Length: 338
Length: 221
Ligand code: B12
Ligand SMILES: [Zn+2]
Image (cartoon, rainbow over all chains, first blue to last red):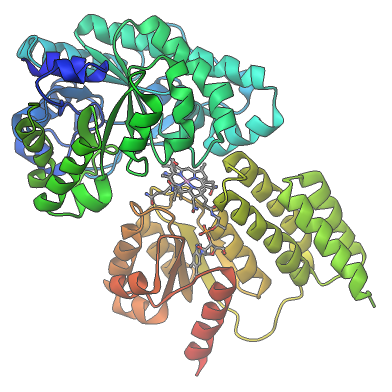
Protein backbone atom coordinates (compact mmCIF):
# COMPACT_ATOMS: atom_id res chain seq x y z
CA UNK A 1 0.00 0.00 0.00
CA UNK A 2 1.40 3.43 -0.87
CA UNK A 3 1.68 6.02 1.91
CA UNK A 4 -0.75 8.16 -0.05
CA UNK A 5 -3.45 5.53 -0.22
CA UNK A 6 -2.94 4.70 3.46
CA UNK A 7 -3.18 8.36 4.46
CA UNK A 8 -6.36 8.90 2.48
CA UNK A 9 -7.99 5.82 3.96
CA UNK A 10 -7.05 6.85 7.48
CA UNK A 11 -8.24 10.41 6.94
CA UNK A 12 -11.63 9.36 5.70
CA UNK A 13 -12.46 6.97 8.52
CA UNK A 14 -11.40 3.84 6.66
CA UNK A 15 -8.46 2.97 8.87
CA UNK A 16 -9.34 -0.73 8.90
CA UNK A 17 -9.06 -0.91 5.14
CA UNK A 18 -5.46 0.25 5.43
CA UNK A 19 -2.65 -1.99 6.62
CA UNK A 20 -1.90 0.27 9.62
CA UNK A 21 -2.38 3.83 10.88
CA UNK A 22 -0.76 6.55 8.83
CA UNK A 23 2.06 8.81 10.00
CA UNK A 24 1.36 11.57 7.50
CA UNK A 25 1.59 14.86 9.37
CA UNK A 26 -0.74 17.52 7.95
CA UNK A 27 0.49 20.02 10.57
CA UNK A 28 3.75 21.93 10.42
CA UNK A 29 6.69 19.53 10.11
CA UNK A 30 9.73 21.81 9.83
CA UNK A 31 12.40 21.75 12.52
CA UNK A 32 15.72 23.55 12.79
CA UNK A 33 17.76 20.36 12.32
CA UNK A 34 15.95 19.58 9.07
CA UNK A 35 16.52 23.15 7.89
CA UNK A 36 20.23 22.75 8.49
CA UNK A 37 20.52 19.36 6.81
CA UNK A 38 18.67 20.31 3.61
CA UNK A 39 19.92 23.93 3.67
CA UNK A 40 16.46 25.45 3.53
CA UNK A 41 16.26 27.59 6.65
CA UNK A 42 13.50 29.79 8.04
CA UNK A 43 12.72 32.55 7.15
CA UNK A 44 13.93 32.03 3.54
CA UNK A 45 11.92 28.83 3.19
CA UNK A 46 8.72 30.85 3.60
CA UNK A 47 9.46 32.90 0.52
CA UNK A 48 10.91 30.63 -2.15
CA UNK A 49 8.93 27.77 -3.79
CA UNK A 50 12.13 25.76 -4.20
CA UNK A 51 13.20 26.09 -0.57
CA UNK A 52 9.67 25.53 0.66
CA UNK A 53 9.45 22.29 -1.32
CA UNK A 54 12.89 21.24 -0.14
CA UNK A 55 12.10 21.77 3.52
CA UNK A 56 8.67 20.15 3.18
CA UNK A 57 10.34 17.15 1.54
CA UNK A 58 12.68 16.81 4.51
CA UNK A 59 9.68 15.54 6.48
CA UNK A 60 9.85 12.37 4.35
CA UNK A 61 13.51 12.30 3.40
CA UNK A 62 14.89 12.87 6.88
CA UNK A 63 12.19 12.24 9.46
CA UNK A 64 10.31 9.54 7.59
CA UNK A 65 6.89 11.17 7.91
CA UNK A 66 4.61 9.78 5.22
CA UNK A 67 3.88 12.88 3.15
CA UNK A 68 4.32 16.63 2.86
CA UNK A 69 2.66 19.74 4.16
CA UNK A 70 2.94 23.36 2.98
CA UNK A 71 3.22 26.18 3.92
CA UNK A 72 4.89 26.19 7.35
CA UNK A 73 3.43 29.40 8.77
CA UNK A 74 0.00 30.85 9.52
CA UNK A 75 0.37 34.26 7.88
CA UNK A 76 -0.02 33.70 4.13
CA UNK A 77 -3.67 34.72 3.99
CA UNK A 78 -3.37 37.68 6.36
CA UNK A 79 -0.39 38.97 4.41
CA UNK A 80 -2.23 38.84 1.08
CA UNK A 81 -5.11 40.66 2.73
CA UNK A 82 -2.78 43.50 3.70
CA UNK A 83 -1.58 42.73 7.23
CA UNK A 84 2.03 43.50 8.09
CA UNK A 85 4.13 40.41 8.71
CA UNK A 86 7.28 39.80 10.64
CA UNK A 87 9.06 36.83 9.07
CA UNK A 88 10.59 35.58 12.31
CA UNK A 89 13.90 33.74 12.45
CA UNK A 90 15.44 30.29 12.22
CA UNK A 91 13.46 29.06 15.21
CA UNK A 92 10.65 31.62 15.31
CA UNK A 93 7.58 31.34 13.11
CA UNK A 94 6.35 34.39 11.19
CA UNK A 95 3.76 36.48 13.01
CA UNK A 96 1.44 39.35 12.27
CA UNK A 97 2.84 42.76 13.17
CA UNK A 98 -0.07 44.97 12.21
CA UNK A 99 -3.66 44.13 11.29
CA UNK A 100 -4.99 45.08 7.85
CA UNK A 101 -8.35 46.62 8.76
CA UNK A 102 -9.67 48.91 11.46
CA UNK A 103 -13.40 48.39 11.23
CA UNK A 104 -15.53 45.48 10.13
CA UNK A 105 -16.83 47.69 7.31
CA UNK A 106 -13.31 48.16 5.94
CA UNK A 107 -13.01 44.47 5.18
CA UNK A 108 -12.46 43.66 1.53
CA UNK A 109 -10.80 40.76 -0.24
CA UNK A 110 -8.69 42.18 -3.07
CA UNK A 111 -9.27 41.01 -6.63
CA UNK A 112 -7.01 38.24 -7.88
CA UNK A 113 -5.86 37.61 -4.36
CA UNK A 114 -4.19 34.35 -5.31
CA UNK A 115 -1.59 36.34 -7.22
CA UNK A 116 -0.77 38.38 -4.12
CA UNK A 117 1.68 37.87 -1.28
CA UNK A 118 3.07 34.37 -0.96
CA UNK A 119 0.19 32.43 -2.51
CA UNK A 120 2.24 31.86 -5.71
CA UNK A 121 5.14 30.58 -3.58
CA UNK A 122 2.97 28.03 -1.83
CA UNK A 123 1.26 26.79 -4.99
CA UNK A 124 4.67 26.65 -6.67
CA UNK A 125 6.02 24.41 -3.95
CA UNK A 126 3.07 22.03 -4.29
CA UNK A 127 3.83 21.72 -7.99
CA UNK A 128 7.50 20.94 -7.34
CA UNK A 129 6.63 18.28 -4.76
CA UNK A 130 4.12 16.62 -7.04
CA UNK A 131 6.54 16.53 -9.96
CA UNK A 132 9.34 15.14 -7.85
CA UNK A 133 7.46 12.51 -5.86
CA UNK A 134 4.75 11.47 -8.27
CA UNK A 135 1.73 9.84 -6.77
CA UNK A 136 3.46 7.90 -4.05
CA UNK A 137 3.22 10.38 -1.18
CA UNK A 138 0.33 12.64 -0.16
CA UNK A 139 0.62 16.43 -0.16
CA UNK A 140 -1.32 18.53 2.32
CA UNK A 141 -2.03 22.16 1.61
CA UNK A 142 -2.79 24.06 4.80
CA UNK A 143 -5.32 26.86 4.77
CA UNK A 144 -5.55 29.09 7.83
CA UNK A 145 -9.10 28.97 9.11
CA UNK A 146 -11.53 31.92 8.98
CA UNK A 147 -11.40 32.81 12.67
CA UNK A 148 -7.62 32.89 12.85
CA UNK A 149 -7.45 35.04 9.70
CA UNK A 150 -10.06 37.38 11.17
CA UNK A 151 -7.93 37.65 14.30
CA UNK A 152 -4.91 38.46 12.15
CA UNK A 153 -6.54 41.09 9.94
CA UNK A 154 -8.63 42.88 12.60
CA UNK A 155 -6.81 41.95 15.82
CA UNK A 156 -8.01 39.02 17.94
CA UNK A 157 -9.14 41.12 20.84
CA UNK A 158 -11.12 43.48 18.67
CA UNK A 159 -12.82 40.62 16.89
CA UNK A 160 -13.56 38.96 20.25
CA UNK A 161 -15.11 42.15 21.58
CA UNK A 162 -17.27 42.38 18.43
CA UNK A 163 -18.67 38.95 19.21
CA UNK A 164 -20.34 40.59 22.21
CA UNK A 165 -21.08 43.92 20.58
CA UNK A 166 -21.98 43.45 16.92
CA UNK A 167 -24.70 41.73 14.97
CA UNK A 168 -23.65 38.07 14.60
CA UNK A 169 -24.90 38.17 11.01
CA UNK A 170 -22.28 40.75 10.10
CA UNK A 171 -19.50 38.72 11.69
CA UNK A 172 -20.70 35.56 10.00
CA UNK A 173 -20.70 37.37 6.68
CA UNK A 174 -16.99 38.16 7.01
CA UNK A 175 -16.16 34.65 8.20
CA UNK A 176 -17.98 33.17 5.21
CA UNK A 177 -16.06 35.41 2.84
CA UNK A 178 -12.87 34.15 4.43
CA UNK A 179 -14.14 30.59 4.04
CA UNK A 180 -14.64 31.31 0.34
CA UNK A 181 -11.05 32.51 0.17
CA UNK A 182 -10.03 29.19 1.74
CA UNK A 183 -11.99 27.36 -0.95
CA UNK A 184 -10.35 29.35 -3.72
CA UNK A 185 -6.82 28.75 -2.47
CA UNK A 186 -7.53 25.09 -1.73
CA UNK A 187 -8.78 24.54 -5.27
CA UNK A 188 -5.70 26.20 -6.74
CA UNK A 189 -3.50 23.91 -4.65
CA UNK A 190 -5.49 20.81 -5.60
CA UNK A 191 -4.96 21.71 -9.23
CA UNK A 192 -1.24 21.85 -8.65
CA UNK A 193 -1.37 18.36 -7.19
CA UNK A 194 -2.30 18.63 -3.51
CA UNK A 195 -4.37 15.76 -2.12
CA UNK A 196 -5.59 16.92 1.26
CA UNK A 197 -6.63 20.25 2.77
CA UNK A 198 -5.89 21.01 6.41
CA UNK A 199 -7.79 23.90 7.97
CA UNK A 200 -5.59 25.18 10.78
CA UNK A 201 -7.64 27.43 13.01
CA UNK A 202 -5.59 27.78 16.20
CA UNK A 203 -7.35 30.91 17.43
CA UNK A 204 -10.73 29.18 17.31
CA UNK A 205 -9.56 27.40 20.47
CA UNK A 206 -12.05 26.57 23.21
CA UNK A 207 -9.74 28.58 25.49
CA UNK A 208 -10.97 31.56 23.52
CA UNK A 209 -14.50 30.82 22.33
CA UNK A 210 -17.54 29.28 23.97
CA UNK A 211 -19.05 26.15 22.41
CA UNK A 212 -22.05 28.34 21.58
CA UNK A 213 -19.96 30.78 19.54
CA UNK A 214 -18.20 27.87 17.86
CA UNK A 215 -21.55 26.48 16.80
CA UNK A 216 -22.98 29.76 15.59
CA UNK A 217 -20.01 31.35 13.84
CA UNK A 218 -17.58 28.60 12.96
CA UNK A 219 -19.57 25.51 12.12
CA UNK A 220 -21.23 27.32 9.16
CA UNK A 221 -17.85 28.62 7.98
CA UNK A 222 -16.27 25.15 8.01
CA UNK A 223 -19.37 23.78 6.29
CA UNK A 224 -18.86 26.27 3.51
CA UNK A 225 -15.30 25.04 3.02
CA UNK A 226 -15.96 21.30 3.19
CA UNK A 227 -18.97 21.47 0.89
CA UNK A 228 -17.01 23.17 -1.88
CA UNK A 229 -13.45 21.90 -1.72
CA UNK A 230 -13.86 18.42 -3.15
CA UNK A 231 -10.97 16.76 -1.30
CA UNK A 232 -10.52 15.28 2.17
CA UNK A 233 -10.44 17.99 4.83
CA UNK A 234 -8.67 17.81 8.20
CA UNK A 235 -9.40 20.44 10.83
CA UNK A 236 -6.85 21.34 13.49
CA UNK A 237 -7.83 23.44 16.50
CA UNK A 238 -5.43 24.04 19.37
CA UNK A 239 -6.21 23.52 23.02
CA UNK A 240 -8.87 21.49 24.73
CA UNK A 241 -11.53 21.11 22.05
CA UNK A 242 -13.52 18.54 24.00
CA UNK A 243 -16.52 20.84 24.29
CA UNK A 244 -16.56 21.26 20.49
CA UNK A 245 -16.64 17.54 19.69
CA UNK A 246 -20.44 17.21 19.44
CA UNK A 247 -20.54 19.92 16.76
CA UNK A 248 -17.79 18.51 14.57
CA UNK A 249 -19.89 16.10 12.49
CA UNK A 250 -21.96 19.09 11.30
CA UNK A 251 -18.87 20.78 9.88
CA UNK A 252 -18.47 18.12 7.20
CA UNK A 253 -14.78 17.57 7.93
CA UNK A 254 -13.27 14.14 7.33
CA UNK A 255 -10.81 14.20 10.20
CA UNK A 256 -10.15 16.21 13.33
CA UNK A 257 -6.57 16.72 14.50
CA UNK A 258 -6.73 17.23 18.23
CA UNK A 259 -4.35 18.83 20.68
CA UNK A 260 -2.81 17.06 23.67
CA UNK A 261 -5.54 18.08 26.11
CA UNK A 262 -8.15 16.03 24.24
CA UNK A 263 -8.48 12.37 25.20
CA UNK A 264 -8.41 10.44 21.91
CA UNK A 265 -10.42 7.56 23.31
CA UNK A 266 -13.15 9.95 24.43
CA UNK A 267 -13.12 11.79 21.11
CA UNK A 268 -13.46 8.50 19.27
CA UNK A 269 -16.40 7.62 21.45
CA UNK A 270 -18.17 10.90 20.77
CA UNK A 271 -17.43 10.99 17.06
CA UNK A 272 -17.83 7.29 16.29
CA UNK A 273 -17.32 6.72 12.59
CA UNK A 274 -18.58 10.15 11.60
CA UNK A 275 -15.25 11.97 11.87
CA UNK A 276 -11.79 10.39 12.00
CA UNK A 277 -9.58 11.48 14.91
CA UNK A 278 -5.88 12.19 14.39
CA UNK A 279 -3.39 12.93 17.10
CA UNK A 280 -1.99 13.59 19.55
CA UNK A 281 1.58 12.99 20.70
CA UNK A 282 2.24 15.96 23.00
CA UNK A 283 4.52 18.45 21.27
CA UNK A 284 6.12 20.26 24.20
CA UNK A 285 6.26 17.76 27.07
CA UNK A 286 7.08 14.72 24.93
CA UNK A 287 8.40 15.57 21.46
CA UNK A 288 10.40 18.65 22.45
CA UNK A 289 11.44 17.83 25.99
CA UNK A 290 11.22 14.03 26.18
CA UNK A 291 13.47 11.18 25.05
CA UNK A 292 12.82 8.87 22.07
CA UNK A 293 11.64 6.32 24.63
CA UNK A 294 9.04 8.81 25.95
CA UNK A 295 7.84 9.49 22.41
CA UNK A 296 7.54 5.79 21.72
CA UNK A 297 5.43 5.31 24.81
CA UNK A 298 3.15 8.23 23.91
CA UNK A 299 2.78 6.88 20.35
CA UNK A 300 1.73 3.47 21.56
CA UNK A 301 -0.76 5.08 23.91
CA UNK A 302 -2.32 7.05 21.03
CA UNK A 303 -2.63 3.94 18.90
CA UNK A 304 -4.16 1.96 21.75
CA UNK A 305 -6.68 4.72 22.30
CA UNK A 306 -7.71 4.35 18.69
CA UNK A 307 -6.11 7.22 16.80
CA UNK A 308 -6.65 7.11 13.04
CA UNK A 309 -3.38 8.91 12.28
CA UNK A 310 -0.27 9.07 14.42
CA UNK A 311 0.79 12.71 14.47
CA UNK A 312 1.91 15.41 16.93
CA UNK A 313 -0.71 17.22 18.99
CA UNK A 314 0.08 20.55 17.29
CA UNK A 315 2.65 22.13 14.95
CA UNK A 316 6.09 20.79 15.83
CA UNK A 317 8.26 23.15 17.94
CA UNK A 318 11.26 24.11 15.78
CA UNK A 319 13.83 22.83 18.29
CA UNK A 320 12.38 19.30 18.47
CA UNK A 321 15.18 16.72 18.03
CA UNK A 322 14.88 14.62 14.87
CA UNK A 323 15.49 11.41 16.82
CA UNK A 324 12.30 12.13 18.76
CA UNK A 325 10.22 13.10 15.73
CA UNK A 326 11.35 9.94 13.91
CA UNK A 327 9.66 7.73 16.46
CA UNK A 328 6.24 8.56 14.98
CA UNK A 329 6.71 6.86 11.61
CA UNK A 330 8.80 4.16 13.27
CA UNK A 331 6.13 3.20 15.76
CA UNK A 332 3.34 3.53 13.17
CA UNK A 333 5.14 1.15 10.84
CA UNK A 334 5.63 -1.57 13.44
CA UNK A 335 2.01 -1.49 14.51
CA UNK A 336 0.56 -3.41 11.58
CA UNK A 337 -3.01 -4.64 12.09
CA UNK A 338 -3.47 -8.33 12.61
CA UNK B 1 -15.45 62.31 55.36
CA UNK B 2 -16.88 59.50 53.33
CA UNK B 3 -18.84 56.96 55.24
CA UNK B 4 -17.50 53.49 54.71
CA UNK B 5 -20.88 52.32 53.47
CA UNK B 6 -20.79 54.94 50.77
CA UNK B 7 -17.33 53.78 49.78
CA UNK B 8 -18.30 50.14 49.73
CA UNK B 9 -21.16 50.92 47.40
CA UNK B 10 -18.88 52.61 44.88
CA UNK B 11 -16.35 49.76 45.01
CA UNK B 12 -19.11 47.23 44.52
CA UNK B 13 -20.57 49.09 41.53
CA UNK B 14 -17.15 49.44 39.93
CA UNK B 15 -16.47 45.79 40.48
CA UNK B 16 -19.80 44.77 38.95
CA UNK B 17 -19.30 47.06 35.96
CA UNK B 18 -15.98 45.36 35.25
CA UNK B 19 -17.38 41.87 35.73
CA UNK B 20 -20.06 42.70 33.19
CA UNK B 21 -17.59 44.38 30.86
CA UNK B 22 -19.69 47.53 30.88
CA UNK B 23 -17.33 50.42 30.19
CA UNK B 24 -20.00 53.10 30.45
CA UNK B 25 -20.90 52.02 33.98
CA UNK B 26 -17.23 51.54 34.88
CA UNK B 27 -16.35 55.10 33.87
CA UNK B 28 -19.45 56.46 35.57
CA UNK B 29 -18.54 54.86 38.90
CA UNK B 30 -14.90 55.80 38.60
CA UNK B 31 -16.00 59.41 38.16
CA UNK B 32 -18.36 59.00 41.06
CA UNK B 33 -15.48 57.81 43.23
CA UNK B 34 -13.50 60.92 42.33
CA UNK B 35 -16.47 63.16 42.97
CA UNK B 36 -17.07 61.66 46.37
CA UNK B 37 -13.42 62.07 47.30
CA UNK B 38 -12.80 58.36 47.67
CA UNK B 39 -9.15 57.31 47.71
CA UNK B 40 -8.30 56.48 44.09
CA UNK B 41 -5.74 53.78 44.91
CA UNK B 42 -8.35 52.00 46.99
CA UNK B 43 -10.92 52.34 44.20
CA UNK B 44 -8.46 50.75 41.78
CA UNK B 45 -7.49 47.87 44.03
CA UNK B 46 -10.85 47.19 45.71
CA UNK B 47 -13.05 47.98 42.75
CA UNK B 48 -11.22 47.38 39.47
CA UNK B 49 -8.76 44.68 40.41
CA UNK B 50 -11.26 42.77 42.54
CA UNK B 51 -13.60 42.82 39.56
CA UNK B 52 -10.85 41.51 37.29
CA UNK B 53 -10.12 38.71 39.77
CA UNK B 54 -13.73 37.57 39.59
CA UNK B 55 -13.49 37.64 35.79
CA UNK B 56 -10.37 35.46 36.01
CA UNK B 57 -12.22 32.94 38.20
CA UNK B 58 -15.17 32.85 35.86
CA UNK B 59 -12.83 32.26 32.95
CA UNK B 60 -11.15 29.41 34.82
CA UNK B 61 -14.59 27.87 35.44
CA UNK B 62 -15.44 28.19 31.73
CA UNK B 63 -18.32 30.45 32.57
CA UNK B 64 -16.56 33.25 30.70
CA UNK B 65 -14.58 33.10 27.49
CA UNK B 66 -12.18 35.56 25.89
CA UNK B 67 -14.84 37.90 24.50
CA UNK B 68 -16.05 38.53 28.08
CA UNK B 69 -12.47 38.81 29.38
CA UNK B 70 -11.57 41.36 26.71
CA UNK B 71 -14.59 43.55 27.47
CA UNK B 72 -13.81 43.40 31.19
CA UNK B 73 -10.21 44.42 30.57
CA UNK B 74 -11.38 47.33 28.42
CA UNK B 75 -13.79 48.50 31.10
CA UNK B 76 -11.04 48.23 33.69
CA UNK B 77 -8.62 50.26 31.61
CA UNK B 78 -11.18 53.02 31.09
CA UNK B 79 -11.98 53.22 34.79
CA UNK B 80 -8.31 53.28 35.71
CA UNK B 81 -7.69 56.12 33.26
CA UNK B 82 -10.23 58.16 35.18
CA UNK B 83 -8.81 57.27 38.60
CA UNK B 84 -5.09 57.40 37.92
CA UNK B 85 -4.60 61.18 37.98
CA UNK B 86 -6.16 61.22 41.45
CA UNK B 87 -3.90 58.66 43.06
CA UNK B 88 -1.96 60.23 45.91
CA UNK B 89 1.65 59.50 45.19
CA UNK B 90 3.35 57.68 47.99
CA UNK B 91 6.49 59.14 49.34
CA UNK B 92 9.47 56.94 49.84
CA UNK B 93 11.48 54.82 47.53
CA UNK B 94 10.15 55.39 44.08
CA UNK B 95 12.16 54.49 41.00
CA UNK B 96 12.04 53.88 37.28
CA UNK B 97 10.64 50.62 35.92
CA UNK B 98 10.82 49.38 32.33
CA UNK B 99 7.98 46.95 31.76
CA UNK B 100 6.76 44.84 28.85
CA UNK B 101 5.51 41.49 27.60
CA UNK B 102 8.31 39.62 25.83
CA UNK B 103 8.72 39.03 22.13
CA UNK B 104 6.24 36.69 20.49
CA UNK B 105 3.71 37.14 23.25
CA UNK B 106 0.71 39.45 23.03
CA UNK B 107 -0.80 38.68 26.43
CA UNK B 108 -0.73 42.00 28.23
CA UNK B 109 -3.72 42.08 30.55
CA UNK B 110 -1.65 40.95 33.54
CA UNK B 111 1.26 43.19 32.58
CA UNK B 112 -1.10 46.18 32.44
CA UNK B 113 -2.39 45.43 35.93
CA UNK B 114 1.16 45.26 37.25
CA UNK B 115 1.90 48.57 35.54
CA UNK B 116 -1.16 50.24 37.06
CA UNK B 117 -0.24 49.12 40.56
CA UNK B 118 3.38 50.19 40.20
CA UNK B 119 2.31 53.61 39.00
CA UNK B 120 -0.17 53.84 41.81
CA UNK B 121 2.67 53.09 44.21
CA UNK B 122 4.66 56.05 42.89
CA UNK B 123 6.97 54.43 40.36
CA UNK B 124 7.71 55.95 37.01
CA UNK B 125 6.82 53.17 34.59
CA UNK B 126 8.04 53.03 31.00
CA UNK B 127 5.71 50.64 29.21
CA UNK B 128 7.21 49.01 26.10
CA UNK B 129 3.90 47.28 25.40
CA UNK B 130 3.66 43.72 24.20
CA UNK B 131 5.57 41.51 21.78
CA UNK B 132 8.61 43.57 22.76
CA UNK B 133 11.92 42.84 20.96
CA UNK B 134 14.24 41.52 23.66
CA UNK B 135 17.02 44.03 23.15
CA UNK B 136 14.56 46.88 23.72
CA UNK B 137 14.34 46.03 27.42
CA UNK B 138 18.08 46.42 27.88
CA UNK B 139 18.46 49.44 25.63
CA UNK B 140 15.61 51.32 27.25
CA UNK B 141 16.85 50.51 30.74
CA UNK B 142 20.22 51.88 29.78
CA UNK B 143 18.94 55.04 28.11
CA UNK B 144 16.36 55.86 30.76
CA UNK B 145 18.60 55.06 33.67
CA UNK B 146 16.05 52.58 34.95
CA UNK B 147 16.23 50.77 38.28
CA UNK B 148 14.09 47.79 37.39
CA UNK B 149 13.21 45.68 34.37
CA UNK B 150 9.84 43.92 34.75
CA UNK B 151 8.96 41.25 32.20
CA UNK B 152 5.79 39.30 31.63
CA UNK B 153 5.28 36.10 29.61
CA UNK B 154 2.13 33.98 29.40
CA UNK B 155 3.30 31.21 27.15
CA UNK B 156 5.78 28.39 27.67
CA UNK B 157 7.04 29.18 24.18
CA UNK B 158 7.89 32.82 24.95
CA UNK B 159 9.24 32.41 28.50
CA UNK B 160 12.80 31.70 27.35
CA UNK B 161 12.99 35.27 26.02
CA UNK B 162 13.22 36.50 29.60
CA UNK B 163 16.38 34.49 30.17
CA UNK B 164 17.86 35.97 27.02
CA UNK B 165 17.22 39.50 28.32
CA UNK B 166 19.05 38.66 31.55
CA UNK B 167 21.99 37.36 29.47
CA UNK B 168 22.08 40.55 27.40
CA UNK B 169 22.01 42.61 30.56
CA UNK B 170 24.91 40.62 31.98
CA UNK B 171 27.06 41.62 29.02
CA UNK B 172 27.30 45.03 30.67
CA UNK B 173 28.43 44.44 34.24
CA UNK B 174 27.78 47.96 35.44
CA UNK B 175 24.31 47.94 34.03
CA UNK B 176 23.56 44.54 35.54
CA UNK B 177 24.62 45.83 38.96
CA UNK B 178 22.34 48.82 38.64
CA UNK B 179 19.23 47.18 37.20
CA UNK B 180 17.15 44.60 39.04
CA UNK B 181 15.07 42.14 37.06
CA UNK B 182 11.68 40.80 38.07
CA UNK B 183 9.49 38.46 36.09
CA UNK B 184 5.94 37.16 36.20
CA UNK B 185 3.07 35.63 34.26
CA UNK B 186 1.12 32.41 34.72
CA UNK B 187 3.66 29.81 33.47
CA UNK B 188 6.62 31.31 35.34
CA UNK B 189 7.72 30.50 38.89
CA UNK B 190 10.16 31.37 41.62
CA UNK B 191 12.26 28.42 40.52
CA UNK B 192 12.24 29.57 36.90
CA UNK B 193 13.30 33.08 37.87
CA UNK B 194 16.26 31.66 39.73
CA UNK B 195 17.20 29.41 36.83
CA UNK B 196 17.39 32.26 34.32
CA UNK B 197 19.20 34.59 36.70
CA UNK B 198 16.39 37.06 37.35
CA UNK B 199 16.36 38.75 40.77
CA UNK B 200 12.78 37.95 41.67
CA UNK B 201 9.49 36.46 40.65
CA UNK B 202 6.09 37.93 41.51
CA UNK B 203 2.86 36.00 41.80
CA UNK B 204 0.62 38.99 41.17
CA UNK B 205 0.51 42.77 40.91
CA UNK B 206 0.63 43.27 44.68
CA UNK B 207 3.77 41.15 44.87
CA UNK B 208 5.22 43.18 42.02
CA UNK B 209 4.86 46.38 44.04
CA UNK B 210 6.40 44.82 47.14
CA UNK B 211 9.35 43.54 45.14
CA UNK B 212 9.90 46.88 43.47
CA UNK B 213 9.87 48.64 46.83
CA UNK B 214 12.27 46.11 48.26
CA UNK B 215 14.66 46.59 45.36
CA UNK B 216 14.66 50.36 45.93
CA UNK B 217 15.27 50.02 49.64
CA UNK B 218 18.19 47.68 49.05
CA UNK B 219 19.56 50.15 46.59
CA UNK B 220 19.44 53.02 49.02
CA UNK B 221 20.99 51.22 51.96
C1 B12 C 1 -6.63 36.46 27.52
C2 B12 C 1 -5.85 35.41 26.76
C3 B12 C 1 -5.57 35.67 25.40
C4 B12 C 1 -5.92 36.99 24.73
C5 B12 C 1 -4.89 38.04 25.17
C6 B12 C 1 -5.45 39.41 25.32
C7 B12 C 1 -4.43 40.31 25.95
N1 B12 C 1 -4.42 41.54 25.52
O1 B12 C 1 -3.67 39.95 26.82
C8 B12 C 1 -5.81 36.62 23.23
C9 B12 C 1 -7.16 36.19 22.73
C10 B12 C 1 -5.26 37.70 22.31
C11 B12 C 1 -4.92 35.38 23.29
C12 B12 C 1 -4.22 34.90 22.19
C13 B12 C 1 -3.48 33.72 22.21
N2 B12 C 1 -3.38 32.85 23.25
CO1 B12 C 1 -4.03 33.20 25.02
N3 B12 C 1 -4.75 33.26 26.73
C14 B12 C 1 -5.42 34.19 27.37
C15 B12 C 1 -5.79 33.67 28.78
C16 B12 C 1 -7.19 33.13 28.70
C17 B12 C 1 -5.79 34.62 29.95
C18 B12 C 1 -4.49 35.40 30.18
C19 B12 C 1 -4.80 36.56 31.11
O2 B12 C 1 -4.99 37.68 30.67
N4 B12 C 1 -4.93 36.28 32.41
C20 B12 C 1 -5.35 37.26 33.41
C21 B12 C 1 -4.14 38.04 33.97
C22 B12 C 1 -4.62 39.07 34.98
O3 B12 C 1 -3.28 37.11 34.62
P1 B12 C 1 -1.70 37.03 34.35
O4 B12 C 1 -1.41 37.45 32.96
O5 B12 C 1 -1.18 35.72 34.79
O6 B12 C 1 -1.06 38.19 35.27
C23 B12 C 1 -1.03 38.19 36.67
C24 B12 C 1 0.19 37.47 37.27
O7 B12 C 1 0.70 36.42 36.46
C25 B12 C 1 1.18 38.55 37.54
N5 B12 C 1 2.10 38.99 36.48
C26 B12 C 1 1.96 39.03 35.15
N6 B12 C 1 2.99 39.58 34.56
C27 B12 C 1 3.87 39.93 35.52
C28 B12 C 1 5.11 40.53 35.46
C29 B12 C 1 5.83 40.76 36.65
C30 B12 C 1 7.15 41.41 36.58
C31 B12 C 1 5.28 40.35 37.89
C32 B12 C 1 6.05 40.55 39.12
C33 B12 C 1 4.01 39.76 37.93
C34 B12 C 1 3.32 39.54 36.77
O8 B12 C 1 0.37 39.64 37.87
C35 B12 C 1 -0.82 39.64 37.07
C36 B12 C 1 -1.95 40.29 37.81
O9 B12 C 1 -2.22 39.68 39.05
C37 B12 C 1 -4.74 32.52 28.97
C38 B12 C 1 -5.19 31.35 29.84
C39 B12 C 1 -4.77 31.48 31.27
N7 B12 C 1 -5.55 30.88 32.12
O10 B12 C 1 -3.77 32.10 31.59
C40 B12 C 1 -4.50 32.06 27.51
C41 B12 C 1 -3.16 31.44 27.13
C42 B12 C 1 -2.04 32.19 27.82
N8 B12 C 1 -3.12 31.65 25.67
C43 B12 C 1 -2.58 30.67 25.03
C44 B12 C 1 -2.42 30.61 23.61
C45 B12 C 1 -1.84 29.32 23.05
C46 B12 C 1 -2.81 31.69 22.80
C47 B12 C 1 -2.74 31.73 21.25
C48 B12 C 1 -1.55 31.06 20.56
C49 B12 C 1 -4.03 31.26 20.62
C50 B12 C 1 -4.62 30.06 21.20
N9 B12 C 1 -4.53 28.98 20.51
O11 B12 C 1 -5.18 30.10 22.26
C51 B12 C 1 -2.73 33.25 21.00
C52 B12 C 1 -1.27 33.69 21.01
C53 B12 C 1 -1.04 35.10 20.81
C54 B12 C 1 0.42 35.40 21.08
N10 B12 C 1 1.29 35.24 20.10
O12 B12 C 1 0.77 35.79 22.18
C55 B12 C 1 -2.14 29.56 25.96
C56 B12 C 1 -0.63 29.50 26.14
C57 B12 C 1 -0.10 28.08 26.08
C58 B12 C 1 1.38 28.05 26.20
N11 B12 C 1 2.08 27.80 25.11
O13 B12 C 1 1.90 28.25 27.26
C59 B12 C 1 -2.99 29.88 27.24
C60 B12 C 1 -2.34 29.41 28.55
C61 B12 C 1 -4.35 29.18 27.05
C62 B12 C 1 -4.25 27.69 26.86
N12 B12 C 1 -4.43 26.91 27.88
O14 B12 C 1 -4.06 27.22 25.76
N13 B12 C 1 -4.93 34.82 24.52
ZN1 LIG D 1 -2.35 23.39 17.63
